Amino acid sequence: MAQTHGQPLRTCIGCRLVAARSELLRLVKDPTDASCVMVDPRRRLPGRGAWLHPDQACLRQAVKRRAFHRALRGPVDASRVDDYFSTSVPATFGAGTVQVESGLEI
Ligand SMILES: [Zn+2]
Image (cartoon, rainbow, N blue to C red; front, side, top):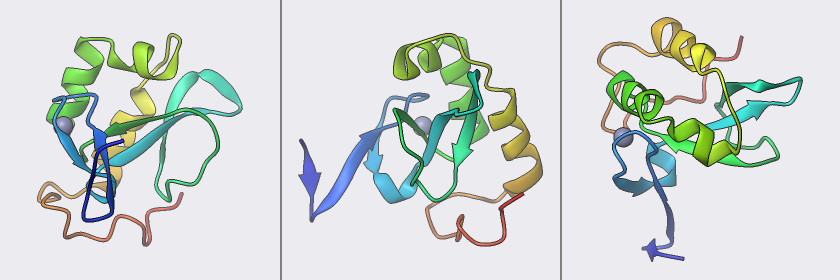
């Protein structure tokens, strides 16, 4: 697996660019509803994950090309990821400098 300076790299399912794991949001299937995708803010939930820039443009691309279906092996509803962006991510979020992991739990 490709690594740079010990940083694990992942591919954003939206724009398909490779980025450090820490710069991407981890998305997983909701364990209670396999047709829904949810954000895994701590990147710790078990199961298959998909990776996405914390950017609505990337989410749109992923939805458009049905990348969730491929990454998570099945039809999935990404509306909760959309909600996550509209409620939790400030418009200025980006560049990996914002702490995503604090204060965003519902
Ligand atoms: Zn992206």
